[in-house]
Length: 434
Ligand SMILES: NC(=O)C1=CN([C@@H]2O[C@H](COP(=O)(O)OP(=O)(O)OC[C@H]3O[C@@H](n4cnc5c(N)ncnc54)[C@H](OP(=O)(O)O)[C@@H]3O)[C@@H](O)[C@H]2O)C=CC1
Ligand SMILES: N[C@@H](CC=O)C(=O)O
Image (cartoon, rainbow, N blue to C red; front, side, top):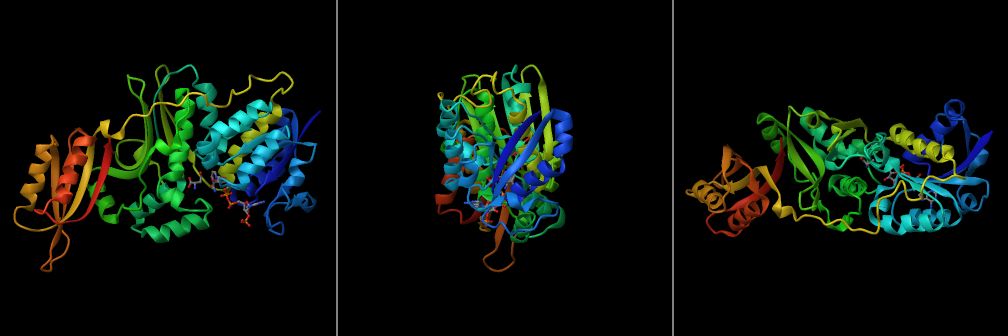
């Protein structure tokens, strides 16, 4: 009879979901896997908290060292989050010969080199299925199921909070701040929600996916990131009228010269596309492989039980591996010895949505459209809307371009901003994905 003893550090949203599944489904997991998985200790700063399931409270401690020093515990589950204590706990656990499961994408995206090397040199493992896409299995498919493919591209809506905000803004016209508060109450947001709304969390996740897909590692600091804070109800409405929804989209794509483009940005997606219709806290990741073609992974991208489900998957994976006849070390990791060469974002060619809020003066429109022409920006359509009716009237000029080079477009916009011929109050530039 195989028994695996587990220690969980952090009993917040994800820790509670993980504990609940491991306790409530203990028998069923044993039936399916042949292994008894017992949570021997669970650590949190607040060990008085109440749970909606039965739990033997003698397992609780507020000192994580008790878990690391317990020789019977073979798997440490880190669910605190952040770069500091969480990192110390993981390193200590790996060095103590324990395997680690984490949902901490920030840590994996920024410190994979260090953490994987420590795991490898100690003959231990660190698994991180829950770090991307909440409850959606996506790490294992990239590592195993799709390993025979060259991955051509990955496109993903991989932040539940941002998608929830954009959905509520689109469907109910609720203000940004109010929806963000609700996402926090539902346990979707990061401890620092700017990570969600500024695209940083999404960048952590696409860093991990692109590294797994392309056989090296992506330097997180080099990923192009734009969040959703500048998106207004007005942009959402214009986009909808034009047949698009706005989503925070992460993309990774390999070009023929082997360069990889990795970026995160709010993007207009045609309403005909599946990704455009992924709403609320749901996430979806489209992976295109050269043999398999287009695949789509869909599910809840955040929250207590969905994320707990992914954490438990890793615990089961570790508990059921024949550790004596180990699968090759590093199997679950990406290559930390090869940095992938990232393509300059300005080389990107795409359609764009541009909104310029400009003072309505004679010659403004002609100046702007000529500036675009000067830099090879061809316009597919244009909408002009009045913003206010006082003497200082501003109008929104909305342009949809044909496929253009991002560098040319930025040049045009820079020239427009600095020109004395036009008074720009605000501007928005969004990529269109069709
Ligand atoms: N929420 C989600 O939907 C998802 C989260 N994740 C990731 O999972 C991780 C956990 O997130 P989440 O559950 O939302 O975070 P929470 O803030 O809800 O939970 C973290 C818990 O850890 C506790 N904690 C902090 N410091 C210590 C310590 N030194 N010792 C013991 N416990 C400590 C906190 O206590 P206190 O509250 O008192 O500070 C809190 O209870 C993060 O890395 C996050 O990015 C991944 C996917 C989805
Ligand atoms: N804050 C994250 C949590 C899951 O990774 C999100 O909203 O997606």
